[in-house]
Amino acid sequence: MKVFKDSETGMQIINEIDKLKTVLMDYRKTGKRIGLVPTMGYFHEGHLSLIDAIRGKVDIVVVSLFVNPTQFGPAEDLDRYPRDFKRDERLARERGADIIFYPGVKEMYPEPFFTYVVTDQLSEVLCGKSRPVHFRGVTTIVAKLFNIVQPDVAVFGRKDAQQLIIIQRMVNDLNFPVEVIVAPIVREPDGLAMSSRNVYLSEDERKQAPIIYAALQKAFETVQNGETNAEKIKQLIRQKIESAELARIEYIELIAERDLQPVDRVEPGSFVAVAVLFGKTRLIDNLAFFN
Image (tube, rainbow, N blue to C red; front, top):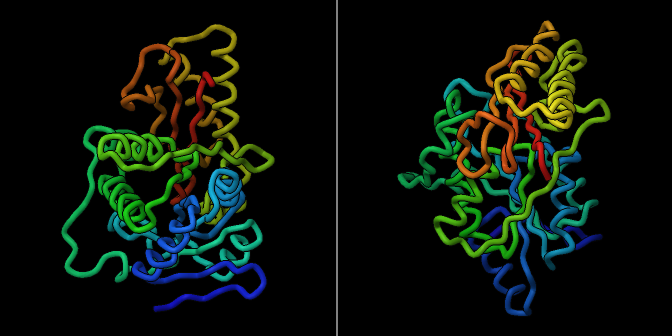
């Protein structure tokens, strides 16, 4: 069993499921509360803010780092998805993680593997339309992590709003004894939502990408001034984003959090979600109109 321990901070790096279970069982015996931060690595401030969000609620913070192959389609970017474990290790240690769970693919998906977790309806809209296997992979890996870590608390970011809502529904429907907390979107100074995929953007694409947040902000201001018609708000966002010549819109939707279905008018519990392509890089963002 492989366990590595940082000599300065005591942070452990664990690669094997059984060893992680053993270590966490020992913590539970002493009454420690366990928190889980699920990630695919290549950390940016958004990831690190998740550690901050959960740190005060638990005694032990487990950061999982696993590029999950089942949430990538055949033509997607699994092979080129950015990876830098040494950098991630350093950043997690500096931010106060207690354990990094860093398993290999065979550890998480022993062959043959037949069982998947699926959320009907919620996974078939928005990003699910263009990425039909994506959310099946997300819910399956998160369910596995919940069963392995058995956290008291898990944290997810608001940027991946559809993912967050699907996981919340899975937790509720399958009675996972996990409190899910939500961390706000972390943005670059120019408003672009932080994402590991931002490194794919060319210089010109990176200059134009903040148009997404500018469009969402314009929509928010319009709603604040009394506009509630969904089509008018979507059209305003479309016109703003299309002013960037490199942007290609995949979707703009005004939807209800409860079921991810379109709404005709802005109402409490609704938010706008967008997906925009710059070259081959797909960026998502969202904004709620009410707190």
